[in-house]
Length: 400
Ligand code: MG
Image (cartoon, rainbow, N blue to C red; front, side, top):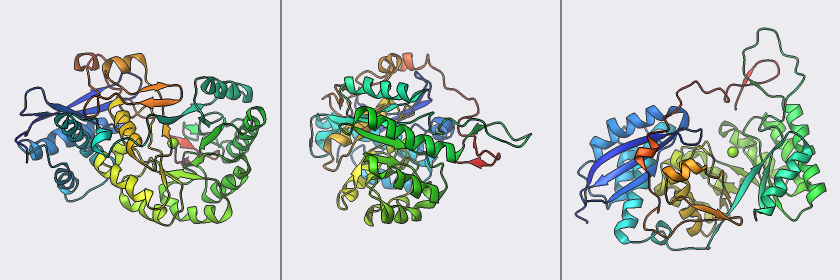
């Protein structure tokens, strides 16, 4: 038992790169000793802030920083009703900060606390898109020239450039998506990239849970011959049973998980070997404590990790991803959205991409800090979220 206690818990909201980011700072009774954690739920950041300040802070101030396992379980069930993105992100902010503090107290980087490195650098995948097929190929080549060997290929984002749709008059505004056009374009662009660049690079694709289940099975079959590294989110979490049919039909490697926030969403998929990569959003499942357990669980079944790594994870969250990646034997790949200059100024010590691999710095804990004065210069965006207002050609709402 340590004599170091939680003295205060604060929340810092900032938006240095076009996405609302939430960072929790846990301050201790030891002068100068604090930890940072990612609690970023971009589109509901005020709700997460309230859970941290109004509910977790009164629960935790005065408690020993040492017992992360106990504190995590208590935070998780303190409201009796548990799970969900708002609650889990709030818990994650505190959980990651406690691991950061533990690393600083031990004078070890987090990967060392977890058991040391399984590799020196973390292989990442980048996102290539374009207005034409040739522009997509050029963008893939740009990443290859930077040493990146895994590239996600999209054509027109997740919607496949819907055009010429016959939509009923007075249909609501929204982001219109045509499943048939999307599927056709996707097979064509993957075929085109393979025909131009061959099979010496790893290609990935993300369907963003938009297709009907039987179309998901068909796309996985149609893409089988192109040997993807993985095909991501072809089904929504509500339609998981269909993964069994995908497995029976083809060998396209399957990845899912960024929307998961309840262990019941992944336990069957992993233990019945229905997926190949688990790619949860670490803060959305409650932080480092549940993520390391999930990685170890997945390892028993030959499922690899591919943690979600978009722009709406704070650099603190990316640092947590990288430390877990460095340690886990069953690490598969890390999604990498990259940081703007402003983000790196707000978050000194952010992980760095060099020649296709990301490296954590070797400072104790997560190795990352926040410049609060600078963070305050980038206020959060409170406008209504528009890109999630996806619709089918007849105007029906569809998952984004
Ligand atoms: Mg995705």
